[in-house]
Image (cartoon, rainbow, N blue to C red; front, side, top):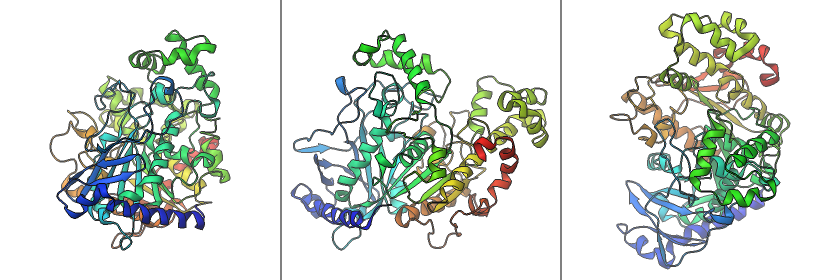
Length: 544
């Protein structure tokens, strides 16, 4: 937690930053609200755009382009610019290949930019207007895909009366490649350092947008949530950069890959592109084209979604999450944590679309693949249904618990159980059965699978561009407003207790979990619903 001296300094910064709206470069915008808004940052003046109830500033550099000798180096400060910089368009995603028909490919390394969306009244921030809470959103994508421009921020900012910031960070081979020749302090974790550079930019500059630099919440989903976990477990690097944290769909206590294994992957990739000599590997890798390195990433990583996840054992990721949360060695801030009832259903659907066929006849074989010697015990607890329902049953079963998966409900509860000994934790489960599909059409599948909750915060989120019509069913739209209210109040006060909404108690037992389902928002016993006592008996090293 930040000390009172640091909080006072942040409040002074917020007031001074608010007055930056009245700097000469912004005076005309303050006087004439139809003019484009302008804000002075520490690198220069930005000109944004007005939207319904918000001001939007896009494509703001928070670090120098990681090109040439800055490839495979920690982020450096961005250069100042003369005059007024246009900030009305997103910049390119970081280099990546197209994935699942949902993310666009990119070859552009000049990608370290962020976006700020401000409720309109925050633009008038002054000594008489309290600065707004700030949420910094870290996108998901298995550390190899995704970008900030997928998420339209206006709905959340406007409805929640908070400032939203979304950030890019280096991905895959460019952000999370480890190699014995790299800087050992941040080996395999440059993308995490990009996120920290963005958070430092926010701390320095968000006051100019009407935000409170002392009230920043870092939030993310999937790999973005894993990133939040890794910021939490590195207090030496991240303490003071945020006051609260939101983890959506990731168990922070999942076992991270070892540095030796990550370095082995990097050595294999370097050899594949002709950079096998350790003495010259860094220079050699910097000389390769983006396309060569992305092709090698696909070859080496294959279907292993953890091939480019940050490893443990550096300054950037100093310890396993389980150890950090069990011993209190993490950034001690309030935590909003949880996931979706049928997380793994998304991946079972991917498998079925790729040709897998699951029936009663091969159900036990599938369980043996996933649970080994425990397969028979699992089959007795989760008996196979009729053929037509097997795939759905597997998705629900695997969402309760699956060894090695960070996307299981019992693991989410494990994070809460440990963290709640040291900080206030608010645990949720998203459970809307009518959640829209996140898959390209034809996509009859729907429900609370992995990433389905994102449309409730970011309507028309870009990876839903394949879906005809509105993102949310009419019955789901009130739940969206409730979720934004809970999340925004947590960012504002550290307690998700908006007026007029069902109470969300601080987590003390698994009966304190808030189920988010249309017409049924309220607490329930999540451990019982997901049979976590059964799973803990089978896997005590993970859940004990």
